Length: 282
Length: 325
Image 1 (cartoon, rainbow over the protein chains, first blue to last red):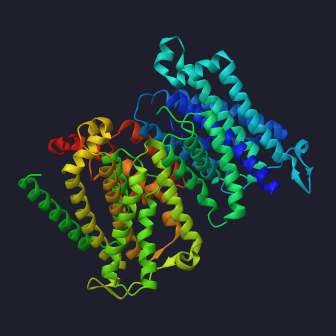
Image 2 (cartoon, rainbow over the protein chains, first blue to last red):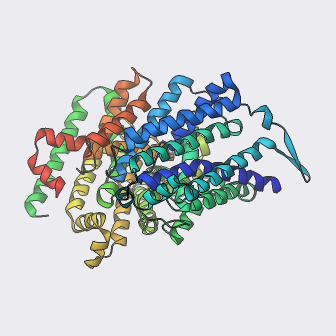
Image 3 (cartoon, chains in turn orange, cyan):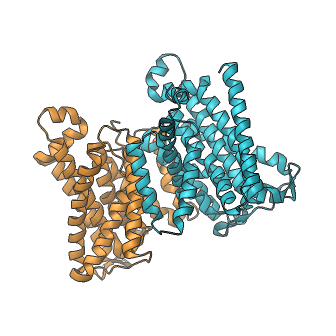
């Protein structure tokens, strides 16, 4: 049972690392980024190739930096010109980008499933009462908590964080007060993309890499963001942890319904509170 | 709608049907006919998705459920009950429509991506059911539908040959498109457009804003289900792949490529989609990339889709007034 709860925690914290980028992008640009799963997948493949040369940590670094650059480019080249357009337009454009990325991955890395070794530093197991648990999984929990803590600290304690919160609340007023919202959102989309890319590398040793990896994680991240309340990081954190537990407990108690439970949870939450757990301004 | 417009609509529908009949007699290529028949099924699918975008401003990621359910229900109905097929088909469409209406009453309360996720949830629920209820659905192996030798007075063979099926699907498509155009001009059509533009204001004017949108959701599901029935008749087989979310995604792409401003846009979209796929299939393996790029180009540069572009190029002034109204 302890194992199940821990595994739920692993998935929950990992999902948060993914979903936080989505929530940030929605907050600042009001964009529903369908390409977020593709960013995660690109991170995993970049990391996979870099790790062959520079080991796991080199792979993680390359994925983070590469995706940060890609994220900034995405904001400047795609999101900025589409500012003020119908949300449906940006949604479809990012959907198109996701399709293109999948084609790109299939062209350069093929359709095979690749595996990715965990770093030697984090291999092995830790002794728990009556059982053992892989250290690497605990490291994923630490990664998720680090992301959550780092984002919370950044958003509440730094000046740039204050600007981000102000611009999420009302971009026009923030701009009038002298905040450069365009530069800010390039930064935020870059951070969100880097987080997705790192999540891709971090998840690779336990989930394996294939061109199909984007879709499942994207749907779960969307559910997290929708349940949490679009654009709310606190809500997303709570939702990610709940979803993580539901996923593993479902396997134990309701194996027939496991795949449906996240959707049922989302329906229940949306019927109860149409704007999500934390409420949303949109 | 006045009487002149009604007569004109009926005449145009008859002319379109006659055109289909001529096509089925003159085009000998079975491949072209297969493609045409298939794009008719998916045109109905995309028409449902486009109708929802046009009238409600809502994007569905789960319409594959309404496309696949009829096939499963007909297959199971034929196996488990003695209901004659001529009655079973309308019953199944009615069941899917009612189901969509009830679900719609809940779903249309939320907007934007949350609505998209809820429809995705329904789609995945049907997908999961289709893979898990192995006794009824055959699981991943799919379900072979055992149609009787004769349906509606026609031999089953007619429904399963490209030429016969194209003509039937084309006629159904023409009728449904006519009804959709009529719907857009009806009271309900105008009311839902008003709600789409400003729900609060429509509410203040004294209209209920919930059930009209749920009705549109149900009609959109019925349209898609009509395509699903034809798809099932033609293939006599259905598998979970049909109800998977990527299937909803393709229909959405067709609807967007065709454009949802003109009610018949999704029909054009699905024809272009299938013929493009066939034409490029031999040349390149980069279908995903090509469809991704076309999706971006169309949404950014031609927000009204190919149908909007076509109308502008042909300078169909009268039609354009319709589309803008």
